[in-house]
Length: 212
Image 1 (cartoon, rainbow, N blue to C red):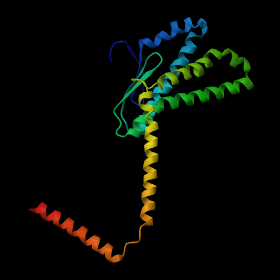
Image 2 (spheres, rainbow, N blue to C red):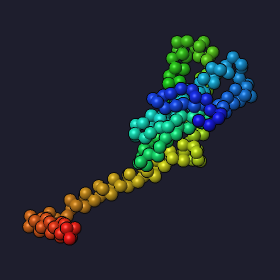
Image 3 (cartoon, rainbow, N blue to C red):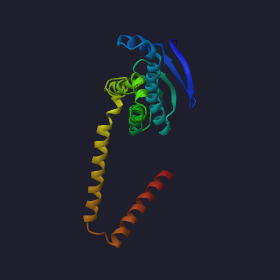
Image 4 (tube, one colour):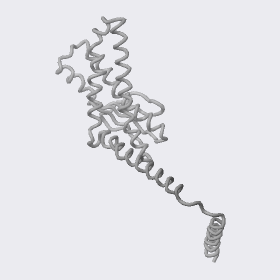
């Protein structure tokens, strides 16, 4: 691995690295007016968002039998390096895997906030800086990653729109084709036998040519 990276751990035999730029969270948080006591807890929340995002990519890639080489964490985004998927649908699924994982984290955070609000509002108030990162910052990263500009996920993720439209058109064409066949008059047995005999002749002629 190039200089500037730290190896954090392995997940399912996939190495996880962090780039030094991830530490820019601390001066950015201070500029935003965050108290010193909350710097490290909010940093862990921020790391959790990035890990959810990249693990989402990795899980989607493994689901499609696409080999994952490494996970790298940077400031405001990460990178899940993997081999190129064989199918377009697999590439799109992997691209959306990160955002879907972040949305899952967002839902879990909202559920925890709801429970704390009803059973322990004091804890909810005390942990509000962490919850702000897991909700507001999470949404910012989601929107950022869906921008259709390389190397962000949006370049591949938004290909889902023409892909779905093509699937709909193909399905409609298949339905119309089957309907048209049903409207055609039934073929007699004599015609079916003639077609089979002609097909057999074509195959026999082809094999005769190959033998020569």
